[in-house]
Image (cartoon, rainbow, N blue to C red; front, side, top):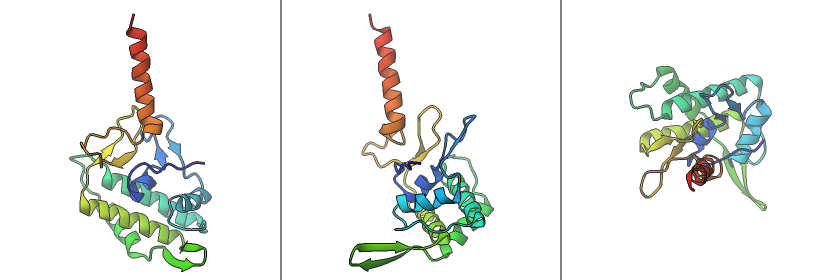
Length: 178
């Protein structure tokens, strides 16, 4: 399982672990608690995968969905009180601990520390209010922070969605040209 970090924020990358949300077959990148532990390492939160119980895994998935709902750029969408409580409770827990060692920086923590870091990042985004967009890819539902100079970024990333759209446009031009 390869995780992609193209959203420009930890919390949005975490929300992006459920891909193609509106399709008939969404792609779940966190199918097991081991996947969640590997994501924490791939995201740079922890140096080693933490133990994640079944209950903690369920809490992480609930947090992911709350983050998605809270940060989705739906102009008329109200914030759910339950999502606010969930983010606040997770952010109030201790986050990962960083320590210097002879080998560099060691990052330690448990599933609650991972949840704390994700929730704190989401709350930070809500406070800063940067432009958050949903990918313009046909079925993609990944959210990202638009930090482009012109403020008109369309795709979550060029590797997947942007490349797909540009290749399709190229093929269409080739078919229509004499």
